[in-house]
Image 1 (cartoon, rainbow, N blue to C red):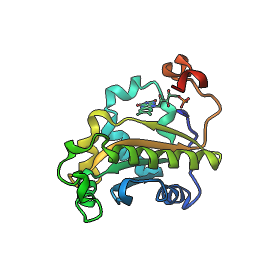
Image 2: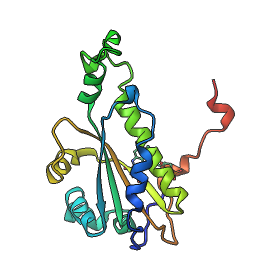
Image 3: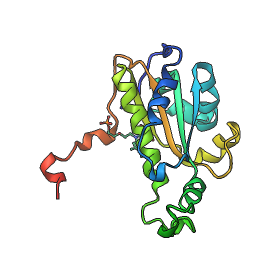
Image 4: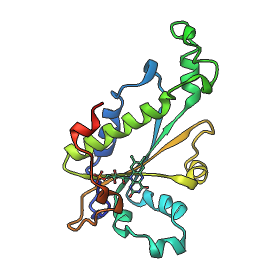
Length: 184
Ligand SMILES: Cc1cc2nc3c(=O)[nH]c(=O)nc-3n(C[C@H](O)[C@H](O)[C@H](O)COP(=O)(O)O)c2cc1C
C-alpha cells in the first residue's frame, strides 16, 4: 500500500477503466449490488473535509495521502442480494428471506473482490494505491454524495503516482506469515 502520493492526476478515463475491470469480478448469483463513488482531483476535497476535521488534519500521520488525485469509495447493497436470491433459481437456498440467513454475507466478499480488482488494475498501470477504512464517517459521506440509504461502505481506495519516500505503517512491521504457515 502507498500512503504518500504526488499531485499528478491520472490520465483521463484511467480510473473509470479500473472500475470497468472490476465489473468482471466474481459476485454471488451475478448480483448487481456494487456501486462506486469516483472522486477525482479537486472533487476529493469534500472527502477529506468530511473525514478529517481541522484538529485531526494537523496531526494526521499521512499528509501525502491527501495528495492522491483519485478516490474510489466502494458501496454494496445487501437488499440486492436478498432480491436476487428470492428469484426462482435461488429461492430454495432461503437466502432471499433475511440477511441473517447468510452464513457468509457475500456482499462483503464481492465488494472486497471488486476492490482488489481495482487495486491490482492500478498497480498494473504502475500507480500506487491504498485501501483504507471509513469508520465513523459513513453516514456523512452517504449524505454528501447522495448514496441511497440501503448501501453500506466497503471502504475507500486512494490511487495516484507514488511519492519518492514511503513511510511504512506500523502494521507492516508485523511481517507476513510464511506460505507453509498458511496452508492447513
Ligand atoms: C479492511 C482493511 C482496512 C484497512 N484500513 C486501513 C486504514 O484505515 N489506514 C491505512 O493506512 N491502511 C489500511 N489498510 C491497509 C493495511 O494496513 C495494509 O494492507 C497492511 O498493513 C499490509 O501492508 P501492505 O499492503 O503495504 O503490505 C487496510 C486494509 C484492509 C484490508
